[in-house]
Image (spheres, rainbow, N blue to C red):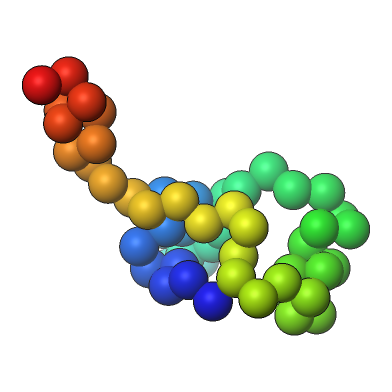
Length: 57
């Protein structure tokens, strides 16, 4: 599994003081992910703040 700490969809909720995955997936995909049907998270994207800057160079 990819490290969720470095995922762009991992967002901190100040009210609950926890991190949550905010990827837009349906119930079937969420169930498959929680049951371990995927070897890696299919929604993982590296939270790379400088990707746009490198692209513009």
